Amino acid sequence: MDEPERARLLESLAATPERLKAALAGVPKRILRWTPAPGKWSIHEIVCHLRDMERDAYLARYQRILAEDNPSLPDIDGDRYALERDYHAMKLGEVVRDWVRLRKEGLRLLGKVKGDRWQRVGAHETIGPLSVETLLRRHAIGNDEAHLEQIEAAKRRFEVLARLQASPAALAVATRGLSEEALRRRSSPGKWSIVEIACHLRDVERLFVERFTKIAHQERPSLWMMDNDRVAEARRYVDAEFDAVVREWKRLRGDTLVLLRALPHAAWQRTGLHPKRGEVTIEQLVSVLADHDRSHIDRTRGIRQDG
Image 1 (cartoon, one colour):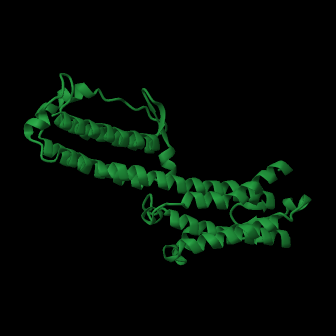
Image 2 (cartoon, rainbow, N blue to C red):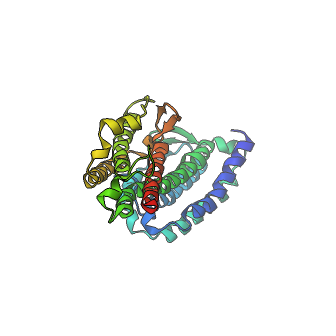
Image 3 (cartoon, one colour):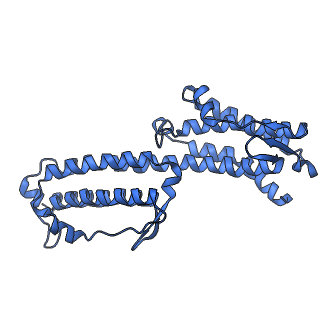
């Protein structure tokens, strides 16, 4: 590692406190405590983990490598820390202040490292030889950048899953009190009625669950597109019973949410090949589905107002 790269990494470490504070600013407690998937950490727990790793995985290791000859560096089990130290019970503001203090202490120590002292090593029990400069790279990129992205991903995932969860209720509100005639009225020839829109939402749900499942378990699978008008005719959307369709869509949406919450963070970045959109991630498709909901629910409101 050359001097300019070390300087960039040190600057990155120095910038992280403000970046973390910005990432947490204004985030409601319900989101800070929300877990993006079963067994995964909340934002609150990620911050607690950052504080403990700052002390035990980085500062303590820098100190030992610089003071001892090839010290043995035990591995750290973050999940064990989270459980045994009861991250849920910790006060986030105190954790952040403690982490900032530890970061400053680490930067002061690293600021004194010169010359070949950057190549001093310790023996990590699973990684093997670990030099000060290698630890610095892991600190800035593998720790700071990775966990900041994890926090942003959790915020994005909360927002989009909340949108998906709210959609069936939004459709119910948009259609409350409408007569059978109003539900089946078409605003113009060739346009769908509210009943047909509900059927479309139900069937698109099945299509997207298939896409999510394929992408999660196959390498860059090809995704097919549904011919909406052909499916509407084949499944006789015009004759469907509205309440039954909405109940089925709500049930399917519940299954979708269970699936998406069970996917690990990395799976959301897996990709499939869409005929028109090209290579798309699960995360992108989830946003497409949420936007699709909004578009058709807005269309339903428009039909109601026009009537």
